Amino acid sequence: MCGIVGLFLKDKSLEPQLGSLLSEMLVTMTDRGPDSAGIAIYGSDQSNLAKITIQSPDPETDFAGLTDELRKAGIENVSILPKSTHAVLTVPADQIDATRSALCDLRPDVRVMGTGSTMEIYKEVGLPKDVLERFKIADMAGSHGIGHTRMATESAVTTLGAHPFSTGLDQCLVHNGSLSNHNNLRRSLTHDGIRLETQNDSEVAAAYLTGEMAKGKNLGAALTSALDDLDGFFTFVVGTKSGFGVVRDPIACKPAIMAETDAYVAFGSEYRALVNLPGIETARVWEPEPATVYFWEH
Amino acid sequence: MPVFDLATTELRNLNQSLHAISGNTTNEDFEVINPRGAHAIAVGIDAPVDVHIKGSVGYYCAGMNETANITVHGNAGPGVAENMMSGKVVIKGDASQYAGATAHGGLLVIEGNAASRCGISMKGIDIVVKGNIGHMSAFMAQSGNLVVLGDAGDALGDSLYEARLFVRGEVKSLGADCIKKDMRPEHLELLAKLLEDAGISDVKPDEFTRYGSARQLYNFNIDNADAY
Image (cartoon, rainbow over the protein chains, first blue to last red):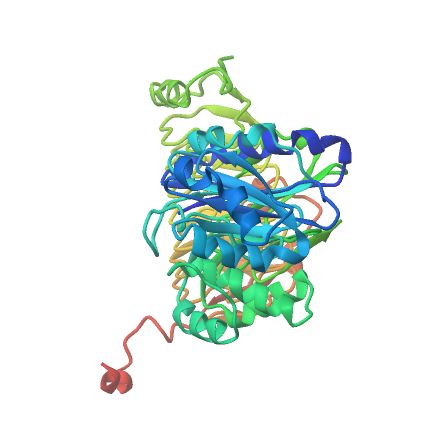
C-alpha cells in the first residue's frame, strides 16, 4: 500500500497555493504509507538556467563551500539554496552534465534527486507531515506537482527508495503497486544509457517512460506503451515540464480517484485526499478506468 | 434525529451509537454530515434504522449491515456493503471496486456506475446498478442477483456458481464458464420485483439478457484427472 496524490493547476491564480494544497493532500494519505514521503513541484522557469536538486546524508559538511568548489571546477555561474538535507543548485542549462560529474568527484555522498528547468524534488524517510515541514513545501508555489507516501515492499526504506523518482529532465513519477518485470527492464534501459540509481521497481518505470519520451513520444504515448511493456500492479501519476498523466494497469486493484474543475485536475489514492480542494463539492469526480491513459498539458 | 458531524465527531462515536440500537421496530433516523471520504462509516449495524450520509464515503461503508437502510448521498469508496446480511444500501453516486463483495443478503442499489469486481463472491445479495459495471464483476458469485441497467466490462461472471446476472446493455466479454441464458417467465417476474424494490419504473424486464453458469467448471470432470 502507498498513497499518491497529484495536482495540475489550470487557474494561474491558484499557483501560490500549490505547495499548501499538495501538502494537505499528502498528509491525509499518511496511513497509506508512513515510511517516507516525497514531493515534486514544478515552479517558475528561469531562462537558460536549470535546477539540480541534491541530497546529502551530511548536509552541513557537504553543502558548505560547494559553490566555490564547483566554480573552481569550471561551473562559473552556480548558486545554491539549501533546505534541510536537500539543496537546489541553479546552474546554466548547458552545464547540467558538467555539474553532475563535478559533484561525483567533489561530493561522492551527494545524490541527485532530479534535474530540470522548473522541477524540484524533495523526499526523505519519516512521516509525511515531518518531511513536508522539513522542506517547507507548504510555502512553495508552482503550476503542478505530485506526491507520495510510501509503505515499502520492493526495496529498503531509504531516502533514495522514496518517491518521486526522476530519471530525465523535468520528469518524475510516483507509483502505487509493484512491478514484476523490473529487473529485465532495468538491464535493457541501462544498456540504452539511461542512468538508474537504485534497485527500486518504481525507478525502472520512471526510466522506462524517460526512454520512450527520448524516442520522441509525448507523455500520453509513453504511458500507452507502458501498458504493453510493464508487468505488475501499478497506478502511476507522472509529471513533465508541461504535462500531467495518470495510468492504471488492466487489473486496477490499486485505488485511484480523480477530480476536475475549471481550476485544476487532481488525483488521489482516496477521495479523502481531495476533500479540502476548492470547489470539490461541484467538481467532476471519477475513478480512472483500467488500462486507460489520462493526460493533460499546459 | 441524531446528527453526527464527522468534521467534529469521532467516527467511533457514530458507529458505537449505531451499534447500541437494538430491537425489531424502526428507530429514529440518523444523519451523518461531512463524511469526507472516511472509512468504515455505518459498519456492522444490526437493527432497523435509516441512516442518511450526506457526502462521499471511503472504504467499506455499510459493511456487514443487518436490517438497516443506509443511503449515501455521494460516491462510495471500495468495498461498500461488503458482507451485507440484510437491509438496504443505496448509493446515489458511483461506487468503487468490489461493491457488495461476499454479501449474503439485502439489497444494494448503485444509482451511478460501479467499478471493477462488483458483486465478487456474492452469496445471496441482490445488487442493482443503474449505470455500468467494471471488469471481473460477479467473479465466483455464488448466489443472489446482479442487475445492471448499463453495460458490463470484461470477464463478467468468471467462474460463476449459481448467481443470476441480468444486463440490459452490452457485455464486453464473458468470463470462464459464464454463458447467456434464456429469460423464462420466472426470471421476468424476479427482475420486475428487483427493479421495483430498487425504485426503477422506466425500464422493463424484457430489455435485459440473463447470464449464468454453464456449470462446467465447478463440478470435477474425471476426464481432467490427468491434469492434477
